[in-house]
Length: 237
Image 1: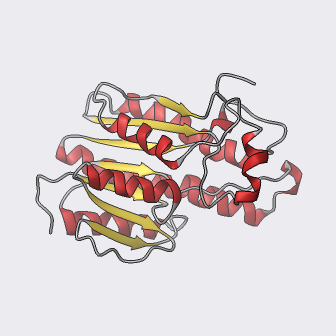
Image 2: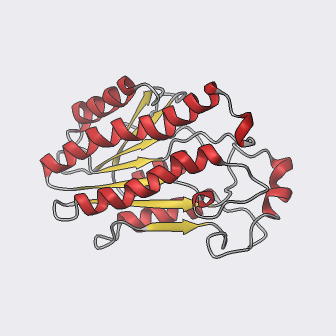
């Protein structure tokens, strides 16, 4: 059981890449962390509780929030980092593609955020950060991305809507909108070609996204913000 005064962050997609970086960053900030992923090993750090679950199943969200409250007693921050990206021409998407992407990107976000915000309201405040993608604002003919735009674009709009709904009740809601980041999602042999798509001509690092989330965490007057971390993609080509 953690101290009732220790802040607690719930982080999804926490087993690798940006999610793993966020877990480490929130521990450095002194938070206890509930790390959620379909495949994540138990942690030897008593301040980290790992939860295995597929967020496409609402029961996984319910289990994660219940475990957070039981173990640590509160929820101060939720980072909706989990996401699936399937790049295909629009007419090639299958029903399974649609179900997989909307299941994690929308259904998982919706139930987990509902439950987390309810706890935040009860305790008097909190913070939600949604990780989206710059493709939402700047479609690229070289990267077909309708399902990403449909789902992560929905999260981006929901970020502003939730920020306004709870602006007077102590719950802030922000988003980080990354470009292409060096993570296990992108094999090393693709890095050069992917970098060429970016105005900065290089890929972002995990720490670039983590630092943006930490900035938002420490910015109490910032809510409803979509913070682009994309090497200039959101400005143009």
